[in-house]
Image (cartoon, rainbow, N blue to C red; front, top):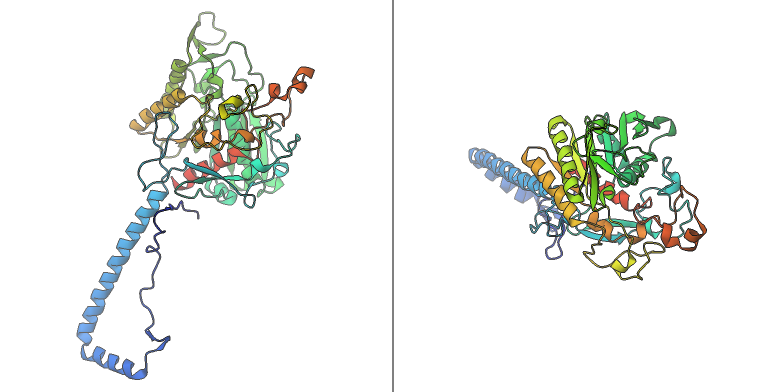
Length: 451
């Protein structure tokens, strides 16, 4: 079993907590004590047998007490390092805690590791998405697959597919949200796919293809994705035909979606990308209702209203003894190269290196929206329901080279103008697999096992 272990650059690792032998063989110069010495010791023990019994009893009490104290310290020590901490900062990047006793899994650096990563091969994943299969569609530089995330003060446990499936036995793990969390779902499926025989796994869709279900039959475990890009009802809810000119949301309506995921054992939500516009069209009423009221409202206010509807549903309907809740923070985009010092007008196309500047924060990531999420989650916690935020934003900000760019399936034929200017059709939003979303799932895995 993996354990998140804190390390320090100023103090050596504490080795005093390892198990020590209670009794050791008496030795002198590497040899047994001579027989004469043994006889003298035995005579003394016989002469003071009653004292010896009492002494032995007291010694055992001392030893047991000592072991109890050490065990308590060990358990506390372990719990401190198995409880990642998230605190809000001024830019809502959820900076690490000032307390040295806890580890912030989201504060760290990317380390090149071509021996352990990637965790799977793109071509060997049965259910890989053509939207994310960058190698299949011609990408030659594959170093983006060879990076692992290293937190500053502990180790992120490597995902063990067998252990995860055992944890998910007779359970549902459901990812709810847009195409970015769908990419995380595909990543999770790929992470377990290779250890499951072909005849013992399946994939099917339901709910008008909004719900995709991967099933590990031997474990009766399912890993699912439900398409709901704004969490609440909207006119973008069709999983295929969802691009509309005038995006409209019903901020008070969520049950149409929630009925498919409320009883899951693990729920992982996201919603961000589809909100990126100054004003959202809000509907009070039903789609197609002539009496419905439409009004354009400032986006941030609508975002909060939608999340309040989501949180109210969770508070009332989720089984707190069964369901574990997670919210994935916004996934950054890399659509403006001038933000990281490259030529204006370029984007992630042709990028092969990550951003080296520590704390880099692109303009595509909105701190105000993250504060809304944080406030809603805090209010839920005050009402007795915990939602763990997976802060993938800062660590993903560095990975400008991790997007598909032009190396993905193009659903529409490209024009000659687009072909002449690859920047014009580069996907700098989604992520290649294997790649960055695998680390998001390693973070989720750490919380599933150690929370």
